[in-house]
Image 1 (tube, rainbow, N blue to C red):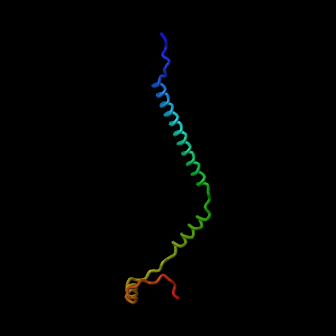
Image 2: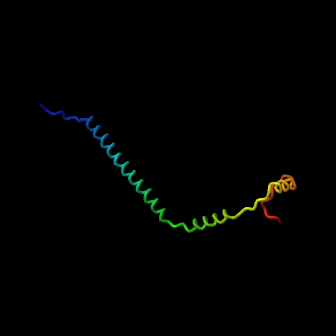
Image 3: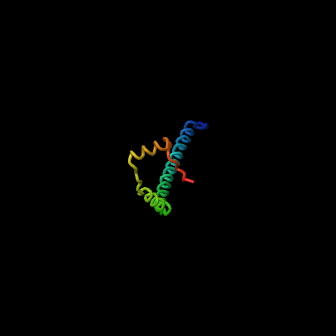
Length: 95
């Protein structure tokens, strides 16, 4: 008996769909591996950087935070508020 000469469309479609899924899975796996490697490499590079400017700013801020603020008794504060009519003191330097 003779073999039919037509195309086997279901096998072609199945092979195409399965092949596409396999290729897409491989591409996404490689992309995920690259993204993870890239993030690890960037974190490693940032950990090696020495921040001179940042350390200077931190030292200055710590010095500013350690300055002692003199406080006044509550009675004197009340008298100053009454004397100024309840207005807050100016933050601008006196002219």
